[in-house]
Image 1: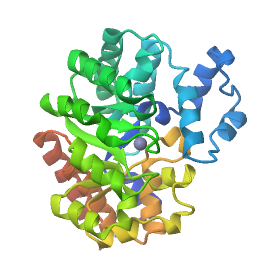
Image 2 (image 1 turned 135 degrees about the vertical axis):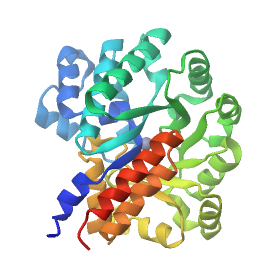
Image 3 (image 1 turned 180 degrees about the vertical axis):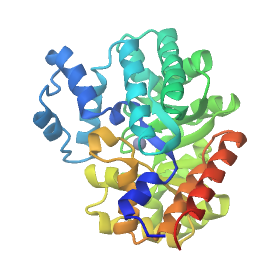
Amino acid sequence: MKTIALTDFVAALPKAELHVHLVGSASVDTVLELSRSHPELGVPTGEEALRAFYDFTDFAHFIEVYIAVNALVRRPEDVYALVVGVARDLAVQQVRYAELTVTPDSHLLLGIAPAALAEALTAARDDAGAASGVELAWIFDIPGELGLDSGERTIDWVEAHAPEGTVGFGLGGPEIGVPRPQFADVFARARAIGLHSVPHAGETTGPQTIWDAIQSLGAERIGHGIAAADDPTLMAHLAEHQIALEICPTSNLRTRAVPALPEHPFVRLREAGVPMTLNSDDPGMFATTLNDEYLVASQVFGLSRVELVGLARTAIDVSFAGEQTKSALREELESFLAAQPT
Ligand SMILES: [Zn+2]
């Protein structure tokens, strides 16, 4: 049997995606459609200009742009179209299961009604599942830059409206000036209704933010968490308690959280036994795909094909999918591996 090219191998690998944001995933075409119907909102309406708009000078600039694009999402139909589009983009990459992060407060503040938001998500999840076979699950997160009030509005909405498939509660946005412990009570409410805690931490600040996320918010996985590489005690803690890091290499490059991919701490974290998954974060804005992230892991971080399969397996293991979904995914992955020439 002839060995297939790496890109074909990665493209055919059945995958789970655990860290991907709804608005940041929207394809350039989808965003152009929205920006052309709202030219007054300042998001470029031409393809080249939009791609240039996505050239981020730093993390704070990225957040500014994200907020501007989010402001284009005005109607429940827009939310529906985004979800269906993202599911389609994931399905062609052989993503079988995805935990999609949605920021309800950002949509509610722009006038989408609370119940209508939940209905749009439910309809999109059902239709996307039927059309592309991707199983979507929801993580609802707090836009950290809006502070504790937003955290409370987010959990209020989740308690009242969480659609079927809701598995997690998160915290995104900037870390600088947004201490994690202030959200302890909000996360306690989320955990009390059975949601998993998955805050971002240690993306643009140091290891203490990750400790805070674990100790104050009960984090079960960490969004990014790359700063853990600077703290051997923390890496040992993550390994011992199997708290996985959702690693998004291209995202870290684009927001300039790391200066260059070869300087990404992926290998140091891996050697310390920290469980990790590969993720695309905001593929539309970062001009990446989940497949590209697996290629980076191979070409930049030096992982073998069997090790790439191992990363895909970890994503299944640390996902919040039901046992039935997990065992079906594991089985598919093992048959994929068995079918590869040795
Ligand atoms: Zn993220």
